[in-house]
Amino acid sequence: MSSQSLDWAVFGPYLLVFTLAVAWALAEILQTFRGDVGRALRTGWTALFVLVNAAFAMLVYALVQLVVPQTSDPWLVAFAAGIGWQALIRTRINLIQPLNAETGEAVSLSLSDLYGRFQQFCREQIDQTLAVERIRLLDDASKLPIPDLEHQLRLLAHASILRSSEDERAEKYIEKLQKYPDEQRALSLASFLLRIGGYELFNKRLKEMKKKEKEEKSDR
Image 1 (tube, one colour):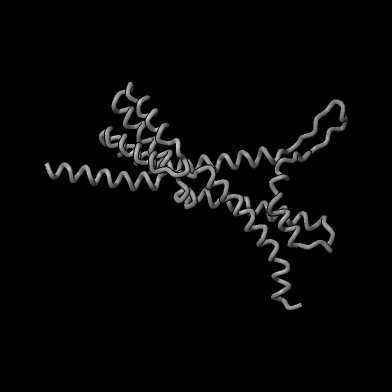
Image 2 (tube, rainbow, N blue to C red):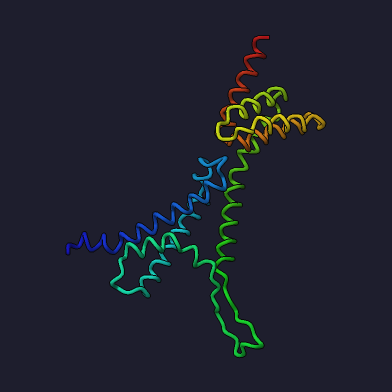
């Protein structure tokens, strides 16, 4: 067997585990920040989250390799580790066993709790990073005329293919805001547009709205 094929046989399964773990971590980010996916993927905290997931999965694979028979197919073991390593984080590891099992409790470590805290920490940091630009966007949009924001909301609701009932929801939301002050109405409409349209779409529409407003003022 050549050294090249030997290297692939050794490191190839690790690459498979790495790829599966990265795909799983990215799916988590896509699901959590689906309204602002592009910018979320570009943050450093996303990179940290993905790399920690991949490192943990490869560590699980390395540990599994120590206990499975050497005749086992490393690719199957790698696939199982890449898909099922999350099951390990649900286990509780006893660090110190009590001398008397009836009177004492073991000092244990919950991998699920540690991972959950790390996951939540990364999500919060990503959200804070994205919030800076989203605040600027909402601030600019809330200064636009309310009828323009309502019109944009109706357009976006009717343009949705996957959410056929979005137009009814938008009309009810617009009607609900009638009793609030104009400043709060404008901010609520802008926030609703940002949530259902996502950052990229809303940012593009906002630029077009501001451009149109400037043109109308210059024509007067």
